[in-house]
Image (cartoon, rainbow, N blue to C red; front, side, top):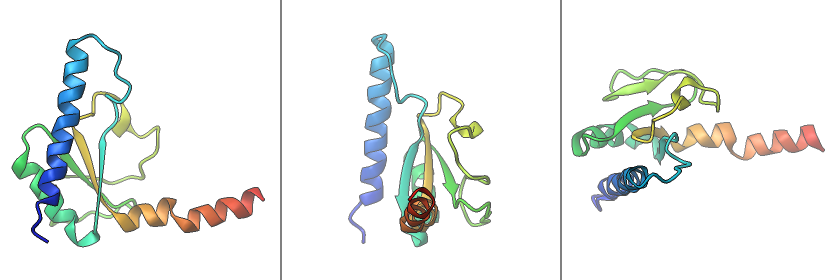
Length: 124
């Protein structure tokens, strides 16, 4: 607690943006320019992390994501209301400055052990 982990992650996000901008300026092909940043946090810190990104960075745009359509009135910033998949409009290009802030249970329930067990049972 209080070890500046969130601020350190924001600094890493800015470094990624800087590298992409340098590559664009040099005319290099950029493969991850259309990918948002995924920031997975404990459930109790989703609101705090979203707010910290807004406070400490003018270049990043945070989006809270819960994976089940849930909307929280206490979240600072935008929220993704539908399930994220490869064909989601969120991935339509030029989004490397967007940050998806999501609690880890969202990903554990969506892509965790239960999903793996189900896949194994369906595919032998």
